[in-house]
Amino acid sequence: MIDCDTAGRRLMARCDALAALSQEGATALTRLYLTPEHAQANAQVGLWMGESGMTHRVDALGNIIGRYEGTDPDAPAVLIGSHLDTVRDAGRYDGMLGVVTGIEAVDALHRAGKRLPFPIEVSGFGDEEGVRFGATLIGSRGQAGTLDPGTLDALDRDGISLFEALNAFGLDASRWTEAARPSGSLLAYLEVHIEQGPLLESLGLPLGVVTAIAGATRRSYRLVGMAGHSGTVPMEARRDALVGAAEAILAVEAVGRDHGVVATVGQVESLPGAVNVIPGAARFTLDLRAADDGARARALADLDKRLESLARRRNLMLCMEPLHENNATPCSPHLMATLAHALEGVGQPVHQLMSGAGHDAMAFTDLVAVAMLFVRCAGGISHNPKERITAGDAGLAAKVLHDTLLLLAEDFSR
Image (tube, rainbow, N blue to C red; front, side, top):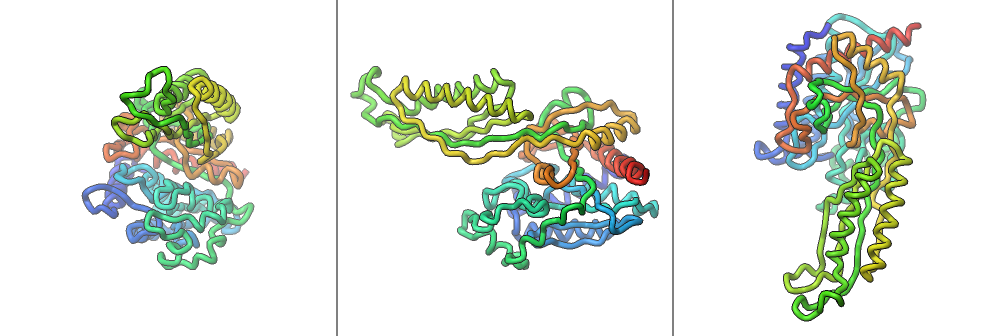
């Protein structure tokens, strides 16, 4: 019921239309949570949902939700979701592709006059990236009922709290808990997303089935030594915090390689930062991810030992502040098998791969079974204006998602 070429062209055009809704005009794509551009994206997505036979609403946290009724409206729904917010100077497919692909799959059912035994909902989450308030997955955690109430106090860079921003968006912030879905209201959660990595492209494959979303640990480290005059303190007497940080960064790289995890230092700061002063303090961040929580824990324990050892050896004080902790999210074997069956049905090989990036699916893992379908992206480039996919791959993803819904309907009716 889906023509991949037609669907692909429509999906690309819709991603282009959403990319035009930016706080920076034509200069760059930036669309943050609870901004006028977010409202415009909701309105545009709502229009497409209506054209595809769905009713739609905006929930108490600003997520837009379309619903296509099944033959039994009381049956639990299959939720297809992804996000409409972006990072700053973003690409046009991260998040948005998943929302419009869900609409495309429903549209095919609508045009065929077909209802499944369960309702289908498509959700465009208002915040996944966490750019405005520093807390990720606000929209999906709100629907899953796991959003920390303290997040309502989070401030953006203009000093506006999430609570205040919800009210300014036209919502009643005091009713934010109403976004949570009742237990038992969902049958499955599905998400289509660009891979954000180079593996599928390297294999020559358009699509892949995700096995798990990596767990992540983020920390901020501070090494404190002694500042001094760069011309008068002899090398053997120095307590150079930045040199210690340099060794620590190499330790992070070594731990990543030794334990088969990915470990990144993304920020480094030297204090006081003068050209003729030995750094008395240095700060650096850690982002460590793994599909297996045990491997992540072992890597962190090893890193702790290495950093403590170098701090003693260099006579530096080591401080650590935890920033983020999230367990790995395994995908449902049953849903993975269903996606694989749909892939085989369109003549595609099945390749399974891990997601190193976080996704909205993570928020739903305690509420319902989740699964993800990855779409190849050029060079693995994402969070970047050079983010690219092809219409052919997008159309094929819509076909596989549609066929997955049909397979789930067969299972449900047995």
